[in-house]
Structure formats: C-alpha cells, structure tokens
Image (cartoon, rainbow, N blue to C red; front, side):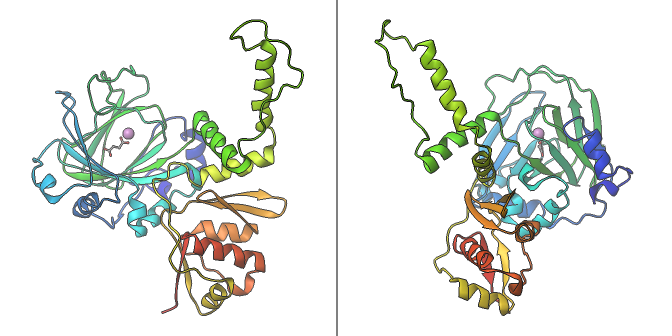
Length: 380
Ligand code: SIN
Ligand code: CO
C-alpha cells in the first residue's frame, strides 16, 4: 500500500486531507520498487507506432522548448545530447501488461477516475517546463533524482510561440528533491516544474475527470445513436411570424424545455454516463477477434481450465440496477449480477468458476470474448 512509507498516513486520511485539495509528498511510499521497465525499454516503446510518445527538449532559462512526436527511430535518440531532454510515453501499462499491477496499488480510487501510467525518462536537466494539469497525478520517482517545484497561486499566462503549455512566469512556493520510491501527489491546478538532477524516470499515475462539455457532447452523440436524436421541436400552436428573423421568447422557452426534458430520465442518463465512462479518454479500443466462440465452446473451455484475460485497452464500468449490474465495455452495455461485474473488473485475469455461471452470465461473457474485451487462453 503506497501510504505505508515513511509517513503514517492512512488511505482515508490521504483522501480526507489531500485528494483534490492540496499537494502531498510521501517519502519512500514504494521503497524497493523494482521497475519492470527501464529507459531503453521506454525508448523501444517510443519507436512503436502504437505508442503515444513525445520528446521534449529545452530549458526554462532560454524558453527554447521543442517537441517532436513519435514513433521515433534509433537515430532520433542518437542525435540527443547529454542534457535537457525528456522522453514521455502515455498509456504504458496498456503496452506492458505487467505494469497493470502497479495501477492496482491505486485502486482506492474508483477505476473510472484513473487514466493511465505515463512514463518520462529525462536526461540531466530534462524538463517539460513549469505548467498546470487539469487532472490529479501521483508522480512516482522510479530512478534518479528529480527536483519538483510547485506553486498553488500563479499567473496563468502561457509562454508565447511555444509548442508546449509552459507558464510564462513561475514563482516557486515549495520544492522537494524526489528520490526513488518517493511519491508527490498533485491535485489539479497546481503549477509544477520538475527538473531532472540526474538521468532518471518519473512514472505518473494520472487521473481523468470529464468536463460538463465532455459529458454534454457525448450525450448528444449518444442521443443521435441510440434515440435518433431524441424528440424533435414541434409547434402545433404556431402564430403568424411578426418580426423577421426573430426567435420568439416562447419558442426559446420550448427549446430550453426540450433540451431539459432529454436529461431528466435519470435511469437513461446513468446508462449513458456509464457507457461514456467506459470509453472516455481511451486512445484505442480492442477489435473483435477473427474466430468467434459459442456459449457452449466458452463454457467447455472454462471447464477445461482456460483463463480469461482482459484486453489491456478494455475499460469496464458498471452501475447497479434493480436487476443486478449493467456493465459496459467500450460503450456496449451488458447485464449480469453484481458479483460477476466485480470479479471481471477486479483484476485483468479474473478467476471464473464455470459452475457458478447462469445462462445470462455465459451469454454476457461470450459477447465480451467475441468483441475482443477478453481473450480465452486455453489451459496449457
Ligand atoms: C514529467 O514526468 O516530466 C512530467 C509529468 C507532469 O508534469 O505531469
Ligand atoms: Co504535469
């Protein structure tokens, strides 16, 4: 558990005192953490076209920030000097499945609020500049030393003509040097500036939180898809239009009411929201496999000891209904009992007891397999 480092902070105390409220430094939160991946592995991943990677160089003093985007080749890395650059790769836990175990350490936060593991490898002096993020982040120092400076009040003006969102002015309020095993938690809207004092890696466990605009945009798209746009404006009591171009106050009220009427059926909205969250900020979704299984084949495989393995890009979210759980995978809704929903979400390799499955659960698992959300690994 990450809060059992040198601090005596409990998870509850962390949530009460710090989460979304103020920064928190946890020294030796993960002492002895052995990373499954090093700088060379990260560079290798950044050469893969499936990975979302960036190389950032420059420094705060000169303001000459440069960004280039992957996939990179070995010659891109060979050209880099000894100093002032950072390689960042997003969604690393989806490319290196064993790193999902690390994400499990953060499962005191609801799964739908966690985004990804971004890893940065920085040369001495490497930095992405002083900036502000909209999401909570846990910065885990994995290798080398990095100095983090923060400011809770700051001037939001950004450096002009800069390819990055770097703050033009940054006045340090607090600073720490993080060493391997230390974690710095930052809530949204705290300006921060990390600079590598020696070559090393910072692993950022990032969160996600939809904005009202994200939700409304998604809702509009969902209405179009699921309900052909929902109800349409109608005006059986129409009067002669008196003033050219005018949208009357009465029509505006009816239009407002129409919009509001679409978001008052709370069950339907919960359906939409959970579906939306199962794909929010996902760069990719699994594809259906070429070979489909039948319910009978699935149950026989499970009886023979086959293992279900969740696709790394699959996001599962569910909500409670009077019938049990409504679970979504990449926007597709399926019904099951709550026990099965929890089992499927709890770990990437859920242990399914075939004898415990009813017909509805078997049909639901078969769909998850046939849509690529779970692979069926035969017993060896
Ligand atoms: C970094 O790892 O250098 C950047 C992480 C962040 O500022 O959120
Ligand atoms: Co940041």
